[in-house]
Length: 279
Image (cartoon, rainbow, N blue to C red; front, top):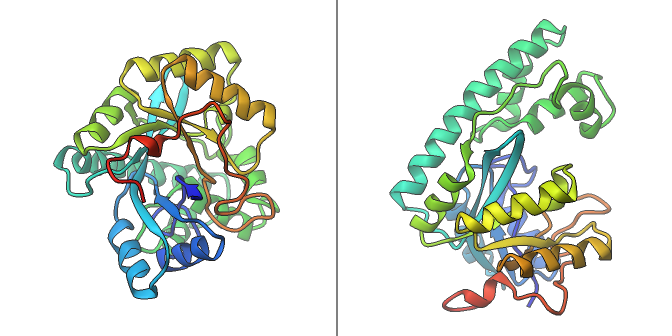
């Protein structure tokens, strides 16, 4: 079975519709796909409908990626196998979405003062019915010639200390974990090696995440050195966490693809092993 337990659609900052996403996942040989858009469950029902209508050999895991604050870091927690109708989870996501709207307005104001025109309006147009994220602003600035790539825009304008950066006010890790558990899901620490922290701080993060009741952490990603995968697997075992894997797919890239290079170290227990009925 090929599991990809971290992906995004146009309902957050992905570029593909849910129908395009599930079709691509099936084309790439993925058997089990988790749709984990940022702070929203809006894409789950349409994705399930698309799988049925297209008659795809694909199992969809209802999921979400929740942004949280931990010390000075923005930490993402993926919820897997969540009940999309759960009141506590939906209340938290509503609060997160309001924070995203307020942050987007402030980012637009800062970029406008820096000489870029109508960035918030253009980001809204790109997002259509989805939430506006920094990725939408990055696409707008690339189109306006601020940088050649989205990565360049983030580095120059949208990261900490730069013109368009606005600090987030997300919930804390414990709140996110509790809401995921209330919805019957598993809380997974997303891409732990991407937070640009020392190993000392990484161990502290994983230890606190586990102590708050976290269930698993992402160990395998598509673009990753084997030594990193082994190290993360070791940290998961040391902290009593299950292991997950996911591409964090937003749109096709030469080095990031649905289902690509996803496997766990041999001594890791997959998060799916605790599911009541595995696909």
